[in-house]
Length: 120
Image 1 (cartoon, rainbow, N blue to C red):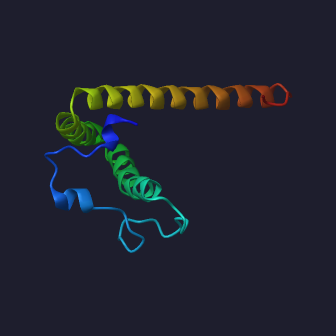
Image 2 (image 1 turned 90 degrees about the vertical axis):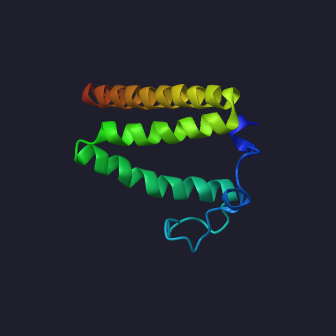
């Protein structure tokens, strides 16, 4: 289990009890009813963060958004400890690798289609 899955002792009871719920304003309406609490939370956070990223890109405010997001990641890292920071960096690297692999696969498929071959 990741270090981020554990709740730090310094976190308040109110913060620990916050969870995504289907009646939450940020919960996607099309979320499956049988989602686990972790899946519900992920859908909720994606529904909130995706428009923020889109807005930052559209309005050329990416640096501001990055500053806000990294501040909150620092708060998480500080609260959960150095092993959590390592987990954040590991996940960041894994996400970068996944994005790179997807783009390479899409590029290869496009080139194969252009050459008249079936993509792999």
